[in-house]
Amino acid sequence: MNDFAFHTPSSLKEAAELLAQYDGDARVMSGGTALMLLLKQSLVNPDHIISLHRVPEARSIEVSDGVLHIGGLVTQREMELSPVVREATPLLANAYSRVATVRIRNAATVGGGLAQADPAMDPPSSLLVLNASVKVTSASGERIIPIADWYSDYYETTINEDEIVTELLVPVQPTDMAWTYIKYLPRTEDDYATVSVAALGKAENGKISEVRVGLGAVSSTALRASDLEAALLGADASFDVLKDASQAVADIVDPTSDPRGSADYKRDMSVVFARRALQQVLNVEG
Ligand SMILES: Cc1cc2nc3c(=O)[nH]c(=O)nc-3n(C[C@H](O)[C@H](O)[C@H](O)COP(=O)(O)OP(=O)(O)OC[C@H]3O[C@@H](n4cnc5c(N)ncnc54)[C@H](O)[C@@H]3O)c2cc1C
Image (cartoon, rainbow, N blue to C red; front, top):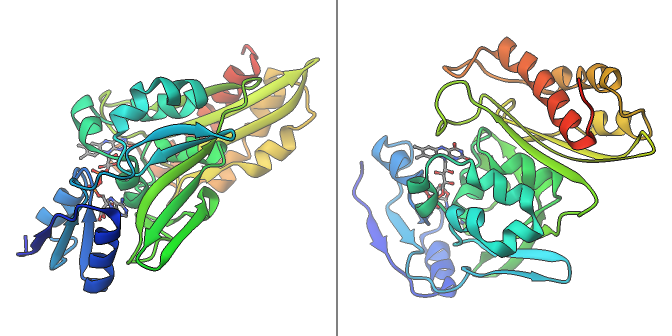
């Protein structure tokens, strides 16, 4: 690990000014759960670390005008346990509850997870189907980025080097749609997913009236299965329809082989778990 100067700003404004001052040679640290590993392995070598642990802002969770606002420094354990999050977006509370271990979730933050952007993380597929957005702040102002435009590649987002994730905005989850988050992990309970699927759905008079499907761990970013969603609208909520339609997932995923499974296995499992998630949210037995 290289030597670096460790800064502890006491406000977001000060943190953003430091980030601008060091112009690409600084890294923000929130929980440190991922950044410490990157530093130890010399995968990043900044001369400056700007820790947010003394920053008092960006720690609240509140609902306003039908949108859940979550500060970037809220921990992933708070996301799991907060009664506000559980009521407004039960899918998201569930996805955060599946991240690693309690020890990691106690330290890891919402903002750090968004910036880390590992495609195998648990929250991204839920964030996609909930149509979330990310607020970033720099010394020159703020901007809001729809989650569909946030993840750009493996561990890459559309954030700029001088920006800090300060808020996650999530529309309150529709109460008339059933939801599920399936994390398929054949190894240990605290591992990253081999394949994960988040879904929301509703059927009326036996026909599918709304459905949303997000996939994790099977491409360079989490994916929304938009073509599958469109194909199912108005279709019969039956096992055969879901089984046939789910095959479309095989064409949009692009997994890599790793110790959690070969690329072919992950592709097959993404079809299977997309179908199972659809069965759950549309109450279809198989
Ligand atoms: C052993 C282990 C197991 C894990 N298992 C899972 C799992 O099963 N599922 C899962 O979803 N995740 C898992 N994770 C990943 C975990 O979710 C991330 O480590 C965590 O989300 C990062 O959050 P952090 O606050 O610790 O970020 P940090 O480590 O502080 O930072 C991570 C990256 O984001 C940048 N950054 C941090 N905060 C901000 C900010 N506010 N604005 C801009 N950039 C910022 C940093 O510079 C760094 O590049 C695991 C991690 C570990 C170490």
